Length: 289
Image 1 (cartoon, rainbow, N blue to C red):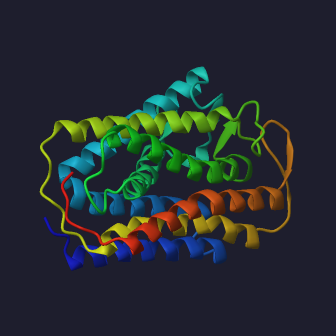
Image 2 (tube, helix red, strand yellow):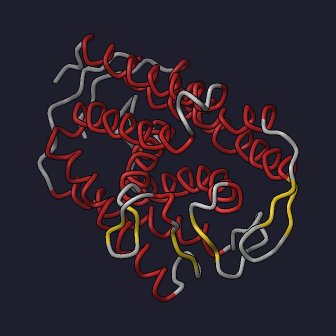
């Protein structure tokens, strides 16, 4: 199967629209509010996931991935809200929109689209773009992708919980109001999603080799890089303010956003740069699953 120039152009257009919406919400919030931008950007990321993923795994394969991600996410999120495991004791607020049981509808797609980008990045780091990976990748890739996805959560959860109040941690936590257990919950959830998808891929017949230009592999790298660059930008433009998390702990907005920027630079941005350097060094070749 060959990825067409039209498909590549469409995927670049989606990335460009995401960037436009994001910057508009930052600098002209009266035109596109942060909450509106969230829904638009998740829709754009979903379109990218299906468009990009269908080239590699077929329409059925990427639908299977998305369904796995949404179902697993809702099971673990509802479980945590009821029992406190695996994310901690918390609940979502009305700002996140309509819910399925205790979990907003938008949450499943958020896990799915962030996870898809991380899955592709993990594949690039393990050689998926260049040659048939060695033994053990079926176990290594889900674990690496889970780590990569969790670096995004490490940057965004304190903003969502303490600044936006999209969710409320009953007892707060040391990471600007977020408990440490939350991040291990993300790791577990994403690992289960990726491991189930890897098991699905292992059981099905290998797809036809993908003849993809370098741009195809570069697109998720650029997308992840742009998502990571949001946090240094926010650190530059968000005004100083005193914040209080739901548990009553007081934080400074400058400290919070600067911390998220630093974490992003040394995790998300680093990962994107590393994957980009690998793509620049090697020639993308056709290969099977």
